[in-house]
Amino acid sequence: MRRAFLLSLIILLSQPLASATVTILEDSDEDSTGTLSGNYSISEGATWTISGDYEIEEGTAIVIEEGATMVVSGSMDAVSPPQLNLASTANVNAPVGFLGETGVVRIDFAETVLFGITVEINNVSTTGWTGSQFDWNGSLEVDNITINITSHPFQIIAISSVTLSAQGATPVLVDATGLSGEGTSLVIPDRTNAWGIDVQGTLIVTGSIFGAAIYCSGTCTLDGAQMSSTGPIEVTGSISVTDSTLAGGVTDEDIIVWDDAGISWSNSTGTGGLTDNWVNILTTRTVGVQNGYAVFYGYGMGYDSSDTSPLTDNNTLEVENQGDGIIEIGSNERLKMVRWQDGYGVEHLESASGKIVLATPWGIYEHNITNLPHVNHFDVELDLPLLSFDSLVASDDDGVINTRLGVMATITNSGDSPATFLIDCMSNGTDANIGTTVTYDITTDETLEVPLNWDSAVEGDLELVCSIFVPYHFSGLTVLTTGAENASTESVSWSEVEDNSTNLIIPISIGIVVAIAVYVLIARKKLGQKMLKEHLTEIATAPADEIVDDEVGTIE
Image 1 (cartoon, rainbow, N blue to C red):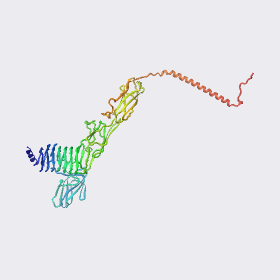
Image 2: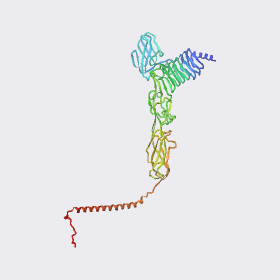
Image 3: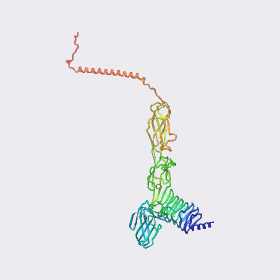
């Protein structure tokens, strides 16, 4: 059975396969040349070695199952002809080989250049050029020609071929694989991968691979590998890159490491320039808060060290997520990048911070996040007050309607934050008049006595029931001690006291008459004393001859 299977497999792989589906059950080594096409699955326990040189048809898919191994020591190249992708500044080296004294160098671009670029050859520059073919006339009596091209970063520029036409000689076509230089990389024409490898087990590459999409949920090892147009290799398991070259990242990075997947990079070269060697991106980035009124602020997040706008738990506006207390703090991949190695081999680590804010009438409650975690999700709990209404005591059991009665409220804050609160009171089923609408401040671990003045417009035995007003911003949160949300006084008997003011008229009248009489007597006495004093003063100051005794008579 084993020999029959291996014989069939050899026959199958020795010829082009249009739509083959092959399962690799045992160890095998493809050490020849040929074309692979269709679907391949390497089963657990088997090792499939590609030591020969093979072309891979577009759409070919290889699955390395858990416990299986694939070793590429030869070459696996996409059939699709490559093109040379250019960075915003590229130096393209074209081999000439001393073709002649004069001639034409024609550059064929893969797509029409719409925005002006600068092309410089032998110190002669053409600026603002657009089009699909660029011709340069000059000496071809050289070994190599360097073509320096500068373009806008937002514009994708690629060369499909260069034609060298020396005067009187047959033109020489140099395709993209024959070109090289700084800021260049070989890619599939449509900038997508032509075939794929799904690594659930182990992939070891010591040879070369061109044009493959590689998904590594298992273990990938690149040791002395030549990887072209394979970017980005997506890793959810682990990957090690040693003494290898990765060129032609289709996107802005050669490798994407998702979430907590592992990567090691040693003595290797990536596409370079604006293309990062690798980036670590979180698939999701969320923070759990206590309710939907909490807001997140992010600072210095992601690849661009960006600050966020205020984010709530439903910033995606999805109805099913309304009020779920989960805030999406990474709205795009750049905000979810937590570490990366740039095209120059420098490793970077996000150093971001954040803040959770709950703004309420009681106060603004904040939680500062010094170092934003590099995880998919984390939870934050705010330090909040926890109030209890301990007691409500009236100063008397009896009250006179429309007259204030003193009441003392006692409130304790056993929470972790202060509060500025209001007291609501009810009596006889309606709002009670307690003589105040002001707020009260209470700090942590404080017991506060609040004096109230209660009056009633109706008679009867009434209780005053008071509670602490809780704003809607605390929806779903516990800020009042269970069982101590409110308090009430003992029953107070309110009544109307009779007005006896008419019985005081007579006493008040008598008092007024007596007061007047006393005043008159005192006034007359003071007047007589004044007159006597004035008379005596006149006698004392008059001359002796002016003193006449009016009463003259005879003493017998």
